[in-house]
Length: 166
Image 1: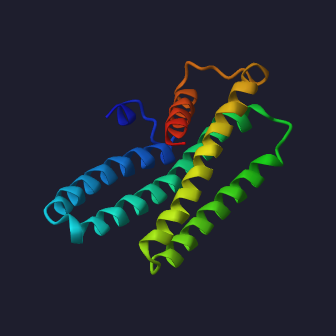
Image 2 (image 1 turned 60 degrees about the vertical axis):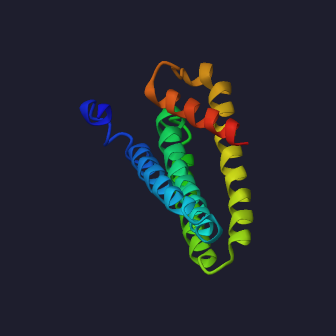
Image 3 (image 1 turned 90 degrees about the vertical axis):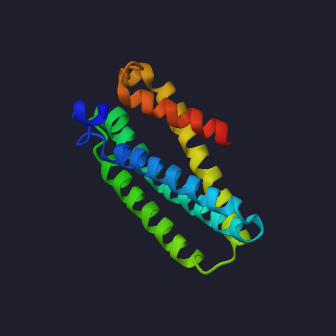
């Protein structure tokens, strides 16, 4: 509600998509979990698939949020490095494409392989989020980054979540 009242949707579309997806994912996972409790021997696999795919899709949204934050906090303050901006856009596009292809290829795989692949991906995403926070902390004075704003708060929240996940 505050997101709409403060008109932040245009400035943070990936963050809004992440929040919306997280709410939808929570509701879906909760319903599937309650369904699986009725017959855990047969229905727990369904919950594992929903949980794993939801976390993988959430990771894609988190990369988008990290792109938004790096654009707002870092790249907008580095005027002389204009060549970095297209490189970051290309890297983000490639990461989304690779994640989509991996999801398509893994859709026919067994659950243990998917869980193993996801755990590796999840570790990498969380390490990337912690690295992003470290870069922000190191460049705070150089780039005059204020820790009182929403972008820094989002980055800090993602990093705390990553640290807990790791």
